[in-house]
Length: 286
Image (cartoon, rainbow, N blue to C red; front, side, top):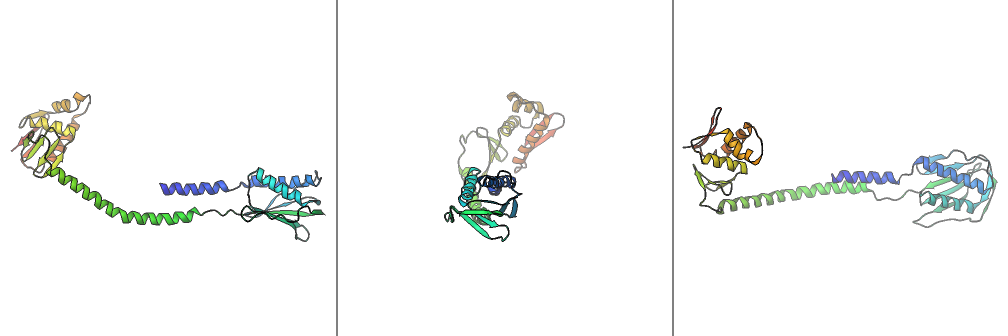
């Protein structure tokens, strides 16, 4: 479960860091529009933004224009900050005809900003702007996950056998102590063949074995012990075990309960539960 949550968290984190393509295109077109306005051109069109690769985009224009380099630097920085886009990027201004870089700058929170040629006036011409969104160096959770899973499995298999052995030893010690420990009210029991039925503790004891009984099993066995070799009607068992506590049951519940008692007393062949058809059960010893 934890592994599934970690995978989902990584996927959600990566998705959260992605910039929707449509939103980015609108922002880049707005940069082009504002740049034309700074050049006092309110009629030319910004052509469709082109995606060069996964992180590089190109802005081009319908007509030639000229501007001051600071206008582009300030405009891109202001727009990216306003729209919470990439913090690190490189901007290249290229001449359309010679495809030469005539102006470039880099905003980088890690290595520092590079903004040369500030205040330079660019003559009227055909320009395209390429913006390269620098990839963030993110910690690769997938590699961590691939490391954690095998280590976790290895530790589990190393520890689990010792843990099982420890639990088993503790359980054996408890059972041994329970078998050797005198039962409270040890004189208050009903002998049932080779068994001793301790009514106050809901326990059967035979030699060194201690057999716990549920509350309903103990009630039923006490009724049978008080009526040895006599037929105990199903109705009597249903009433005294369940109905007196406000629980309505069917005779099948009695059959199941007797079956459990028969199994717990099966080590002594002299102790028997005989089904008397249409009436109930007879508890016989001997």
